[in-house]
Image (cartoon, rainbow, N blue to C red):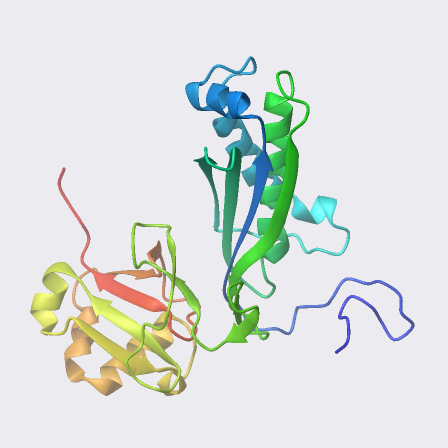
Length: 270
């Protein structure tokens, strides 16, 4: 195994990712800050002197993810499409658990962005609470999951790469869920037709082999669908919207193994 951030002379350098294909990449990290029970109670009640602790820490974590390249010398500047920071107050352990999820379509992963977001959110929690509790401890900052890219997918419970990727959309919008979407053995895209589009096509869900796509983007998927079943030619009738893993997408949006791609008519009214 070699370290990609070292050149042949052992000198640190930024890895050139220009020749890598773009893919959807996502990473989730977690950490926690332990504090006295009375401090946690004040935080929950909004009784700390600096105001809304969790809202401030959430903004700090998001800002940190966006500026990771300014903090970690060899990281690339990334155009993140999503940064989500969540908190869980654990009374039994007297701590706040922090999780961060970062996502983009790009040529390099977002693990460092997720880890940086968690770290700075925890530090901000310390800053917001230190007036009443300087004994707080920050720890257990770690990568939980990552998907996309040449190195494959990862989840902490096994500590190993695995073929089944991490995808979004099983639960509420923005949640990360684990497991295989496809019902065929080869790498594939899971396609859903929603609302009245499902009625027009007479198709609710199907799996499309990844190797049937001439181009690994939404436009290539549409072409493969039309070749698979002529009914999909109706995707071109009127305005049909598309989402990849519950994120609005265009024909140029990349798709990768076990992405969920949904086609649906525009929602009007209300």
